[in-house]
Length: 183
Image (spheres, rainbow, N blue to C red):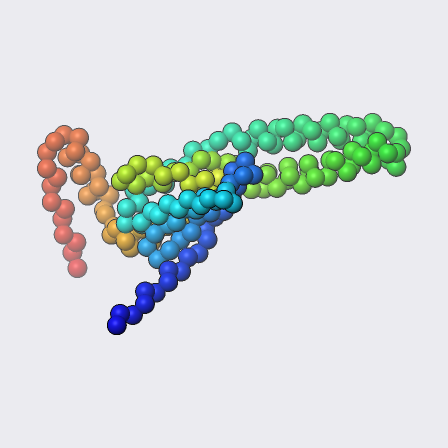
């Protein structure tokens, strides 16, 4: 009789939404990452083993700045409207406060979350889109967390070994053997 397989323990690294229709999350297992995209009716899973991970590519987008400009402009108009009235208890001023407060909260939240980005993981099969990582700060934390885990799975390579392999691919000559480390 064989023993049952141990369940994989996952820890959520990031979550996000796309256009308020799709929820995305990124989970870390023992030896892999799991990207989940859910629409409520369907779920898509992509598993990326740490031993196959070649790199993390994050490209900043203009979404963060555009949203700040739009919300900031609206808040400025609301502020001008509020300051231009003499009576703070007038219905128009109260309406500006009521509609302006949620805009201010969204503006401050977006400002504090930091710049947006589009993130991909580089694998031997190509790029894998990771929509759960939409902020630069989250990507930086992910890279810091994954570095030791990937090094444990793949082993570490000296910079000189890496460059000699690159030079041999470029010139077509075999790489020189790496010097053995001294004890």
